[in-house]
Length: 109
Image (cartoon, rainbow, N blue to C red; front, side):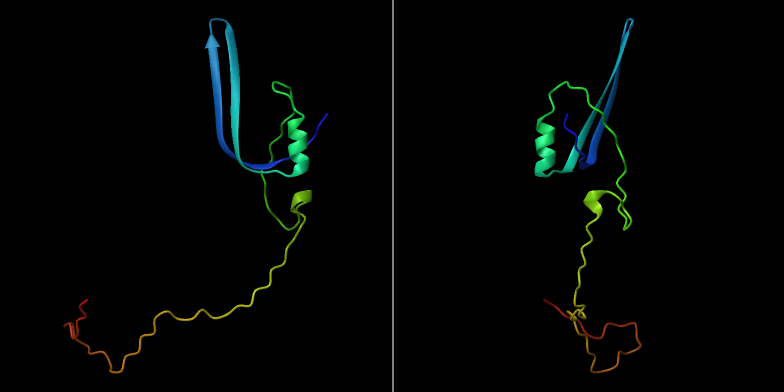
């Protein structure tokens, strides 16, 4: 029996209840997105048959440095040389600004 774990985002959950005369049925449809698959997972998924009963478990993925899950044990160190960003605009006033409310200069394009 194949066994695999996937990491994905839940895109949509649709729960529908159907009640007729004396019958009641419930169906749940879960649509996943951004599924992280590797060759091993894909091979395991292909072994499942349509309408086969499976066990499903959901767990909130919380990223932390002390995570025990095997797919989050890899820590990548990134060293960047931090450089001061260069200024896009340099404003240099040759003369001091007048302390008036009037417009002294206008620029037209």
